[in-house]
Length: 136
Image (cartoon, rainbow, N blue to C red):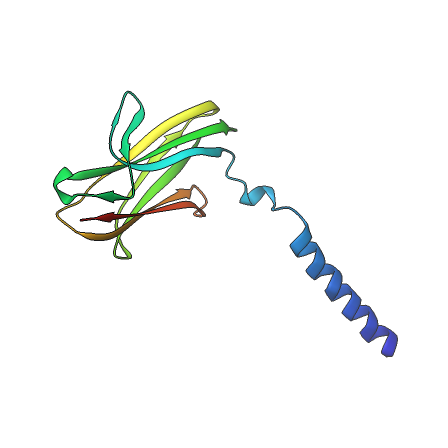
């Protein structure tokens, strides 16, 4: 009986160590690298213009610009926009297989001043990155 309990303790310890020491599985890999992600006032010629963390409500719309690299296969990403922790919009856009892909999503501010954030969500639903910003 004592040998059986010792074996169970050792097995539990090994499972715990493997969980923390092994790298994330392929299921956790989105299949691309986020090289840039910014919130900005606009996008011109596929580049963000006036990126920042604070915007005035009178600009009307803010944009979240994403540059992805090393895209292993065609996929999608979703920009989830939140105002004061309430989801306001979800925009799903494609990423095409290749060395580099740039895309962006815009959100009308609707006159709402306060705390905003945008989450980048991969096709499986995992949040890859979050950017917070203020609207005054």
